[in-house]
Length: 310
Image (cartoon, rainbow, N blue to C red; front, side, top):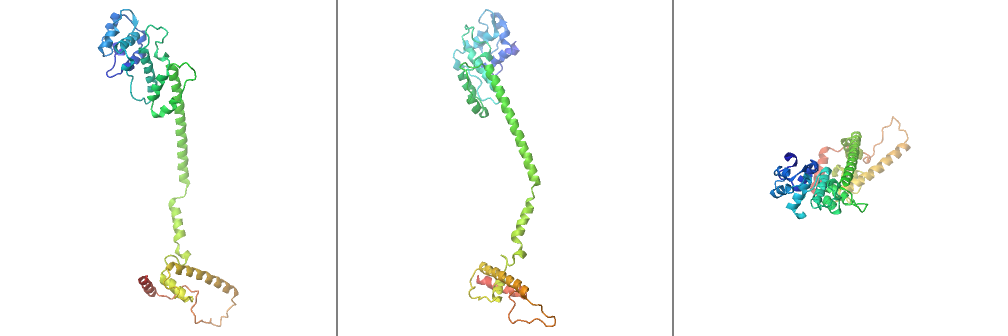
């Protein structure tokens, strides 16, 4: 009996009383002499002395409640387990401790009052204390719960509802986790079937940096553009001091006109006799590539001269 009903070191009084109830303190009838032989159960001299004070046969549970009430006549002196509970079962345990705290200060002569903590009505003050001790994951949902009937439910009924709420919450969480796992698997499949990023980057580079397809691109030397415009009869005095981009735009325009003239001349040209050589013109061919017939050294000298002028 001492092993089942002795208070553990550092254990709160209300927690100790609830453990005594769960271990069957209400089923033990003891006279005052027998109760004194139990020795120190509460680790407090005032409570242990009051346990064996009454000589008549009483249940150990009733002796424990009356001895705590005699030692602490004011309810504010007895503190339930502080802090927040982390699981629903710990929360239900705390709710039962609040019921024991209510029973300590019951009228012992009132036979209509319950002797079982689970049969105590869960009053609104008890519920507010329970909600304040709940973690943030439960507090918002529990705060909106209200009793439909005027009579408060018992602690056992509230505990049953809390367990149902915990089961529904766990089921919803499991469904959410399964849905998330499916989405992750689908995302992995989509990624595995998508083209590699390197291929797309290579295509972009080919589109924007293929010099042969662009003709005179951004890397054409200024001297080459200058020779091309001069050979095509342009008055170079009006191009003096113009930026390279302007020269490049004019070259593109002349290339388009030259290509159109070449196509039309091919359609209208008569066949040439093989016995007569083609007549040479004194003017240079304006359709030729400006890079042909120009040595690299000359281009380098012209480019260097323009660089110095810039």
